[in-house]
Length: 300
View 1 (cartoon, rainbow, N blue to C red):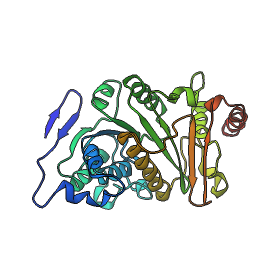
View 2: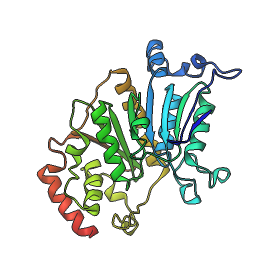
View 3: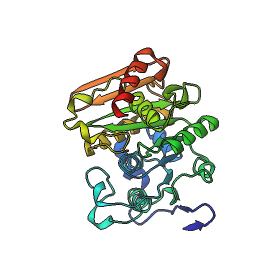
View 4: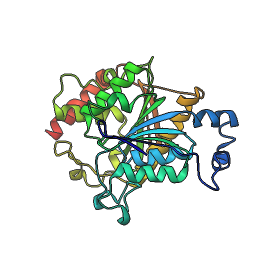
């Protein structure tokens, strides 16, 4: 393992370990992907920012799909409040760096994996290194980390890297795909000119215009965008990783039906409903503006 102090990046890969065979380890994927496609996935690099609620399970899901290289980033440590949803959070990992714990889990699935570990998270200084050579970006930032999220999506657009964001909402997930030739993250969410609370509302409602999860929120006082807090479930995180994994296969292999932004998708397992619709103007849509106005008044 080589540590590059300047950027706080750790790079590692091995020639495998006794008893491990890539072909055997991921043989049960064959059928849903061809043998040739599995080898293509082996040669892909996916970047994931955030190793918490969704980012950690994104990494595990994609590692089990046989992705051969990852760039992963997080500056935080596991705490007891993470136990309800974060796959890496256990008694044995308390106060351990999230990115180190998840890197070890990924290596335990595929000891041949090529890992770039960014222990300071994604910053203005290392964003280029984080996305260097990346075939797909999967968003795992905390909901409220909008400033750096916007920068990463903008850089993906510049570098023509497709990107997926899948948010756990209640016991469901809302997700969007952004392709280099489709609607951009900024054009869809329309953050420009909004204050911090306004941007949170734009992101929240832009993710799930249909608001399928709203009726299953039993205690609305626990959702407070102004105070940057909200409830979560492991079910939502697991579902988010599932849909992100499916979209990753489509984007990395270039096959299958893909509906990128301005299409949005929302599945709520508790309500048993799925909505996929096109929102041509994103948050500039008239109905979205009305909902946003009401939401901003409510949280203000």
